[in-house]
Length: 159
Image (cartoon, rainbow, N blue to C red; front, side, top):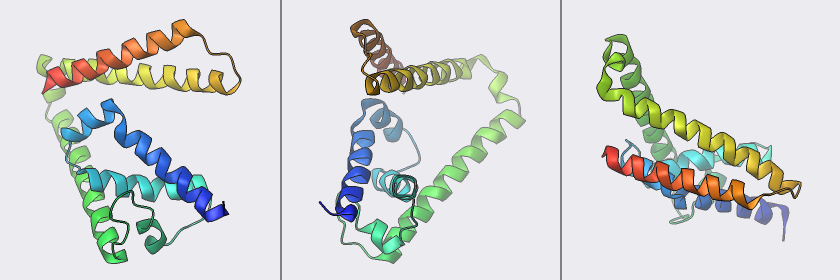
């Protein structure tokens, strides 16, 4: 397999794994991003992080999981839309904090689930690092799966 093919495989499998994650799915369905915008944003970020080299937008557009025959302009428009949606979402959060809405009890459950998600990600990373060195424990895996399922249910109940 050539270096470019291996790189493409790594990027595409990372994106596919992220897009198939049930937590990602619930969050994406309730976000301001479309699936294509998220995939494009991930391509833009992961292609440089994984490859360590700067890929052109044309090369990135060919890495899309579906419809990889889009133009560079279409890829760029989708990426710009994703970045604009993210900026607007962040500004909304800043606005809510500025006008004092974050201190209301109605948002407490969102803050709590955010903290649980942070804990889940940290535990996942620790478990992943142990797996690499071959020190996985079944109990830790069960705890992580329980936390993941709990998060999915809590996220669905917020809707």
